[in-house]
Image (tube, rainbow, N blue to C red; front, side, top):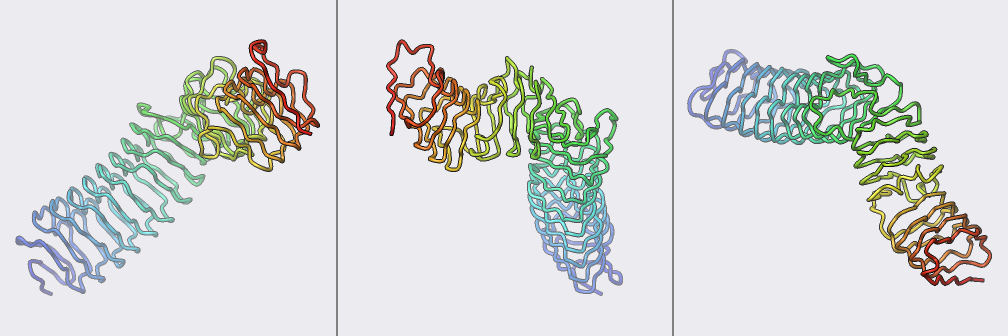
Length: 446
């Protein structure tokens, strides 16, 4: 078989020669031999036939001008270092039937931005995309079982969706990448050392209950048979993927304790309770994210001296009104500078229809200037709006039955209150230490 500028033996391309820029591999070729195009300085584009089955090791290594490659569905094997140092390669689509890709296959492809991996591929080999510094988009198949060591080191990957069949993640797999979020499924049996070293990973969730971790027995991924989540590793100087079990302890659906040195904490979905004193002494929290499943905050959860720069509740406003808060030292809104509920920053407050009770301590110490209450509201709990000092007037709905003690206490700029005469108002519902300086107008509705 003959083709221009190609040395072909039977059905194998052995070598490419000459200053050729575009290569069309003829039909009937089944293999590109090891090193066949290696160090070819001119070739920019290669078109493969559907008959191709194998691309050998270093087949296109150091092809500095190669810009375009499309690997057909017939290919089953791509050898080690097959495309290493192809610095002009920007996008690769790998055929649906590739079963094996060797180590460092695309290592140091510095302009590679997007890769579509075949659905059937079970392993991303070691260093496969190492030093692909612009690689940000990788589409991985559902059958993937293993990610090799340093596979995505020094890449621009920021988000990866790992399939439910992942069993092994190698050492330094995402080192110095741009990864922000990573979930490890419960099928994972081994997590290598320092997989997120020198990253700015923000959200890490590990559901593996019995995974081993590399190099450090005391970094137990899930020794407590619950889901532990640390929201911010930051630049942690080599934290292993399986994080220190002393950082955040969750037993069943209850948060028991949080390490005082955590700056950002993500409480996973499914947690219903934060236990007594769980965050006492945590004076470094910049962001706390609470799940929509949360039902109660027990006694003295935050204690004294705790501040939160940003609080996020991932449920609806209606769900937040239903959360049971045991005392004022358990109210996160009391100590949070910025509050996000259901994806929106808390501004002037609108309580949605359907809410029948605003629970105790729900909105204390917040700076909104107005509150709109729903017609469905029946009860406002203790200290619900305590020290909301920017409130100037409120109108409570006709169906309201009860305003508990200290519900609006300390709102010392409150000048006008409109409420139904049928509502039960406690002695201190609107108490104000500065009341002698202000004339509060109360208007009753029949």
